[in-house]
View 1 (cartoon, helix red, strand yellow):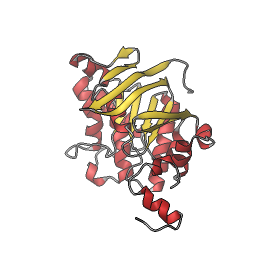
View 2 (cartoon, one colour; view 1 turned 90 degrees about the horizontal axis):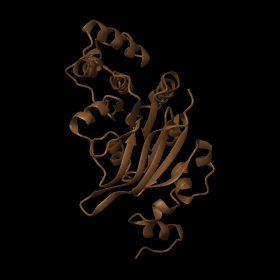
View 3 (cartoon, helix red, strand yellow; view 1 turned 45 degrees about the vertical axis):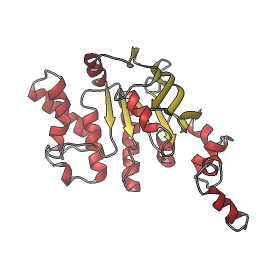
View 4 (tube, one colour; view 1 turned 90 degrees about the vertical axis):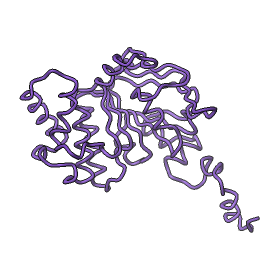
Amino acid sequence: MPPTDDNIIEVRDVTKKFGSTAVLSDLSLDVKRGERLVILGGSGAGKSTLLNMLAAETQPTTGKITIDGKNVCGMKPDDLDEYRKTMGVLFQSGALFNSLTIAQNIALPMQEHTDLEQSTIDTIVTMKLHLVGLLGHGDKMPSELSGGMKKRAGLGRALALDPKIIFYDEPSAGLDPVSVTEIDKLMVDLNETTGVTTVVITHEMTSAFRIAHRLVLMDQGRFVADGTPDEMKQSDNPLVKQFVHGSLEGPMTDRKDGDAYRRALLEDKPRN
């Protein structure tokens, strides 16, 4: 299912400040319904802050965020609760409840937010376990699962209420290369089979290129590039080139502390 022409997410002129420090500055972004968007950026670029605002966990200082036609800025608590039922989040750790089985973790959102009979919930849990490749593992505890399986279980719970959007926070963090490939494929498969809009926060380029319809690069709280995987690979933007290729040379390195020493070594000059 390719992305549609209408926007499910619209970010307009968003700034986020903590005290006098602007973490995000004048961000604007559209995400198409059914799109797989990857948001790239180094540590401190503002990715997690943006994700928290999209999930309505924090509010922008200025600007507007509209999701599925609703302004999520300044929503009343009851409206926020309803909005959060329409989206899922896969956290870096999976964020499973260690005292519950995998099946119980997936069932919990339905038990808390719906009036479904337990027999119906059990049937849906089985479907979600199958969807994320964990059928037969529902009775296991989180401590019995590998890192990749925990991510799958967390994704199963994120899918419990059939969300319109899933936000992924560094989904490949802490996984071996094979597990990363499996999670990447699962994200793509879920998007293609269900049409769920997929927004991924990552700094892993291999995963980003496997997953994305489109990528945006954040740097110092701003969007600096936007394009398809091929466009990003071929970009002449110095920031994009450095980030995509992991080069030591470029504007991201030049502004870091200690860069004078690095340049001195390259130029074979003594350090002051």
